Length: 345
Image 1 (tube, rainbow, N blue to C red):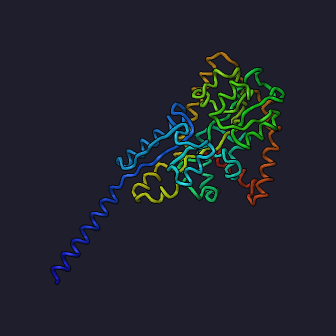
Image 2 (cartoon, rainbow, N blue to C red):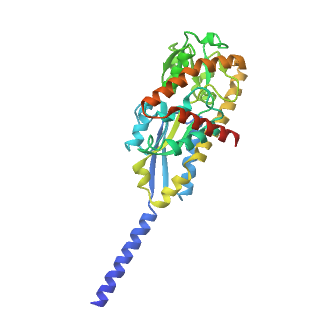
Image 3 (cartoon, rainbow, N blue to C red):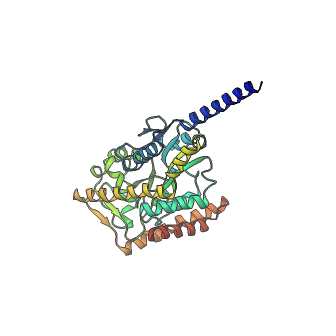
């Protein structure tokens, strides 16, 4: 009896050890879905390197299947829900494509907040960690970040003054930015960025606001006649962006693989995404200048007029947040403090 008991115990221990070894050796495939072509900066210089790093640090036990350009179906505004609902494991998306869903995050889209993409991205992810946990409770944020200072790209007469925008149809990516365009005198047209080239070529819009870096993969430099940016350390606007993971997929990982994801998430990862965008902006702006088309930087006095015209966007947002039980002024002050902190560091 003692011998049988010993053998049974040994067998059970061996089975447990084998089970532990199988768990430790578990391999996971994560499907990543996003809206841009592989030629764009975010896929080519951020998502692909991130996937390679995760695969390497996991010893090859994590595999990332990357599906660009909405290859798995749906429209760009559906991406966040695809991650939340487990249709895919990872998505990169524009948060503002779901208007009103992330009200606290919109503070980073307010006029004249952004400095560099890297510094403001670090500030945004840090702000999430301190103030926005509830807004993103249904997914696992890998990197919440922003793009660099948004720029006007116009067909027809260039924009050098506020009056030059009056009545012209300009695409904006999110509700905050389309509101800003309206305050500046334009006729705002909301649409996801992949639709911009066709809208420009068919005359649906007279221009668009996008960061420099995305003008290259979208072929915008060939479709417009001029480019306009503001003076000073703070750009006209930015959009909030999210690289996020299905929470169930994240929590279902073995501890050691979850640690790999954690090591490649957070403020520094957001900063890496922002840095890639900053470099892309510099290269694309240089390419635009080489075309010989006007690249206008409006002077400080005219920039002050744009800032003054945009103040109601900020005031209205604070009032709207108050109606939703959010202290918008406190959010604004905290966001500005973090942006200043990371810009100075």
